[in-house]
Image 1: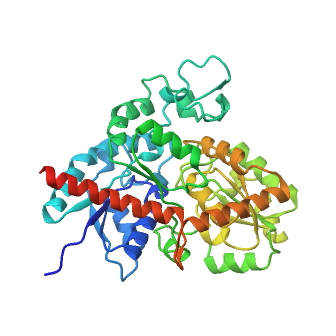
Image 2 (image 1 turned 45 degrees about the vertical axis):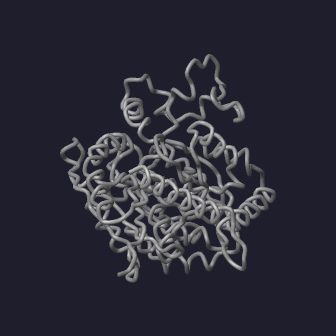
Length: 431
């Protein structure tokens, strides 16, 4: 009888920005380790994931019941990519109702065989709460009281959810209720690179007093990303053919992620700036603030009169509705820079391809990402491109595992699993 495999259980928050990195990690572990992997989420997210899993994969997909209407959300709202930003906090609150079902699922798995639980749910917002940052601030600039090693922040670099927090708002209540449970773990995996992000890792190790393993970049391959459950607003073949006609490093890529958008006036000004620049560009356009996030493209209301026709006739620009195959775009030789909200997944995808970033932060941790990038790799012109190329090599070396060489992220993932086995064996002996 074959010896049962260790079971890795993954349960990401219901957002593409969480689900896709978890899927990438699951596929990587399946390829490099002999573990059983169980991927847990709500029914609609699991349904989308089924098309993302390779036919020969042994990853198990398990559903946890969830009805968004029971929590005052629109029907079938199981992912942030179909919700306007103000409702994302409502989905976060609703997600806590999944805890009992998840606990039961874990107990069932443990009864069947030994289990290693990888539980990184909701980590992205754990320590961004205002009580750690701006308590007692009496000037426009401040420092982290519990981490003097970090540089000073300006209040303009804080997201609105923190600036508007008064302790009774939805974000504050959510963090106060859930933060203690999140940090009470045996250790945390970070989708970053040790050599690139030493200061941030130092902060979490000091703040939490627990191991923090840098295992990034955890990214889906182009082939897997193409199956990741999102319908592109443009044909991949058409996009590639268009990019192939452009000179090397001549196209600006503009996208603000799957949960962010700008106002109508900002959209108008951005369109005029892109047209006036005389440069090639690809712009992923999502409905502006105040419009239904799932509404049809309304160029006459959102863009300058005749803009779409002029851009099409000139051959200089492409407008893509809602979502584009970002990895394929960033990996193309014609891309020169990326105007981005600087969500961490987008940052990693850009740096992994050596593409310089122009940051336009909008929410969450994006402001801190922009500040970090400006201080870490912020330069101008040719120097910025050289820096981006250096970071690309650093990131790719971190995940190299060949010819007797193991990158830092490969070693960190090995260390994590070794530590997990020790913790499990210790628990067995105590039992």
